[in-house]
Length: 162
Image (cartoon, rainbow, N blue to C red; front, side, top):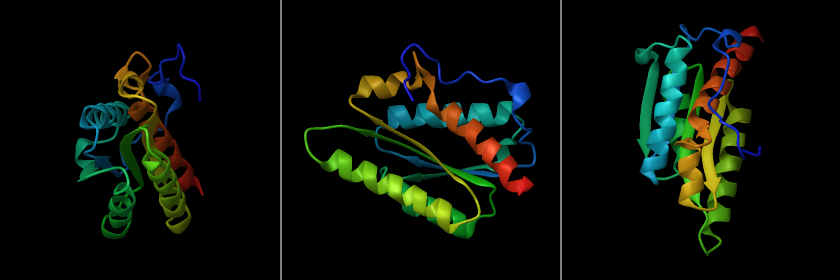
């Protein structure tokens, strides 16, 4: 999705299901912490704004984005949750490392969504530079964490209907 001149944090609360009875897990990468903390704060703010109770939002930290896969898998297996959001940030460098990490994390999250009956929401920024990530984690383009939280609420609602 292009974010040029678009604020990612805009949503109409009246169109979002009430999340009062939903339990969320959030796995946060410690790498690029300035960005991941902004994403986390945006996600929590949106969840609580839509009715989620703070005590129903559980946070686990992992060292980097690749470890999000294992952290989310452990949450799926050890906690009773309605949805898990993974938050990370990978900045493109001059080597293939960026592509390998992004591909691995994306495939890992896809696998978790196929393996478990609880949705895993992907909130991993994969940008060309730090400024792009800052702009999308509470900067001029809003906050992708908010967008992930809204997706999480909608997916829990969908899952409960099914």
